[in-house]
Length: 207
Image 1 (cartoon, rainbow, N blue to C red):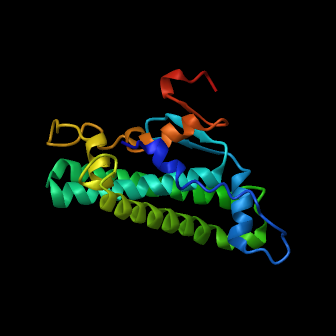
Image 2 (cartoon, rainbow, N blue to C red):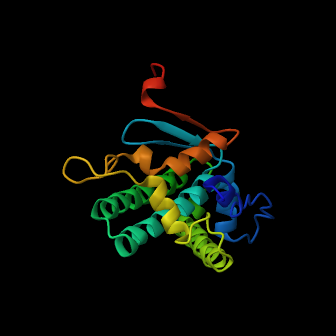
């Protein structure tokens, strides 16, 4: 059975061969720059994680978002669990916010020249679309082979099972509004990054 770490490695493209700047495609140039810029994100619980590469952060976030979309579809259509549907609606929104933060971070970074700033949003969108398409294609291939994370329901079932909790209180997921929980796969990748980290709020020293 594959885990998320093995899965994301199949789609990671380092993009370190930028080529000449003269006549270079704006997205290719932005990929080269983004790969050299670190990225730090703080969740709504004030936990913090870092990637050594903004490019890698965008790709990991895009794959994780797609998997949560698949989890949402599984919750709505396959098992019909309202509290899990609500959870995945919230978690996909958290991933959207993360991708927005990555876009803003890259746009305002000093390494990005003014001539490339108009292309930043479409660059991040293209990463999300490309990684999303690769993820969905991989699921179709895995379903045919019967090896999708060892689950017959494919990636949606895998993500659903990983994030499932019985409802509490007002029939809600206990981590409904917890960004750190929503982004746990992204955080695991940050922890694997040689230049990355994850620090919980209570572990931080005084800033």
